[in-house]
Image 1 (cartoon, rainbow over the protein chains, first blue to last red):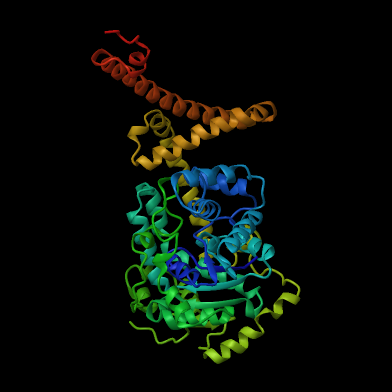
Image 2: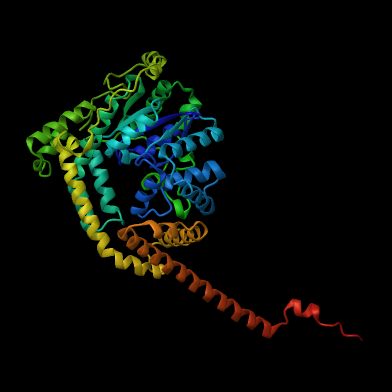
Length: 303
Length: 183
């Protein structure tokens, strides 16, 4: 069975793009967001999903089961997958993840299976559950500039049709706090890993020079770094999870990524954190919060 | 403002840019941790420890409570609307929403009748759980009735159409049974 490789990052951190790119390496099978380790059992995962009005289960998990067990993602195979999952509500979440890894290995012969579920960045319990269940897993911590994440999060909330104006406002008021909380969780988590067990990359570096950055990742994993392998990672749109799924499991990755899954190199402009704190919005933060955020950002290579 | 850090590959927490040769040497020894005992978690255990970790973590807990309160209010307001929407799936904002809810409700009803899950819960659950179950079963019934109503309308239309066709032409089966006329 192949080894688990986990991309750690909060939402809105290029996670769908970067995970799918890495997952396109010929020796890696890239899953969409499985949302499994957020709870202890499959039944608890499904209860959480239904609370979020995803009635048949996590779209990424449904698409994965449909793909690896039925060879296609159609409304019918997704319903079959949902039926199959429903019969296993008493399973431990890690058993379900093991099943996905085992089947993906059989189907693809991959040496690693890549999982990313950004919500775990906010759940210390889920992170620890994953570490205990997969002591041999390897981790890639992907970071994004705090102001880039804040802007992306705010756009996502404003454009969402799911939230009422009140629900949007609560989220917008806290948008600056998401980055330090998630990054602190991930830093604390990585501190309890062995030094060789994780690598940290900046999402912006992938956008600037994907070939070099992803080749380093492949090298660290002990995988092929030839031109064909690197070029495969530059074509995320070829992943079976990069397009819109059937109506009963349409997403499983960021909708914006699914809308435009091709990799477009760029040189993201990184705003100055000090400059933000001088703005009217930044003035709302007191000195201890400003210092803390600036230190944390500096620790991750952002000024 | 540009960023002058070079840290594309920051391995093991160090912020040093690594040449590929160094990375290979590092990767060769990467799995040595597998023989070591799993270290203690450094993540906060429980809400109090999380809140006292730093100011943003404390803010985050407050945010979670605020989010929960708003969500509960919205759910309370929407409950009646959602129930009536289930009875009128065509009013749902997106066709997918109707399909998801409808398929899930019909499917769970079938499962229930095959495995008698609700029946077992009814005999062994507390009052609160039973009230929740009643709400869930009523919703399912609304969907199933809506589906049955739709199927009834389709069957009626089909029968009307068959009757109309029958008036125009004799059905092939009837024609086959008719005795052949002798010259």
